[in-house]
Image (cartoon, rainbow, N blue to C red; front, side):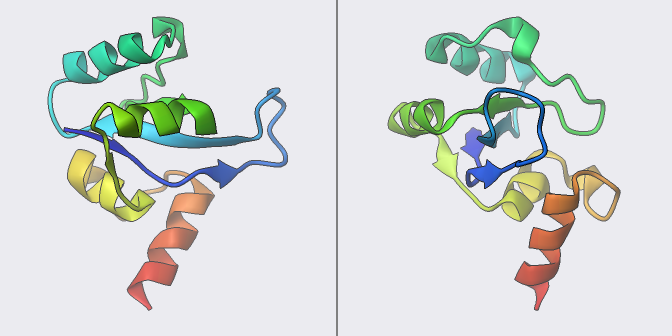
Length: 104
């Protein structure tokens, strides 16, 4: 299954795009790469992180992947489903903050 979380704003990012979400899978990475190809993403944009491989999506690509069947989840749920071994470890500050809010 392909999952996407909510769009986050990254004001300090040096990239042209400041708003994006994460696309990940709880299955084989080939499924993720196939979906990325359907979206027109370059393989070079794949975030090959050892603990959380994913693609970053702009709002327009997020809307398209949802139309193609991706499941919308919170960042915490994306982590729980796709990277259960990473929960509680240092990832992104925004993810830790969301986890804290959801647990309250």
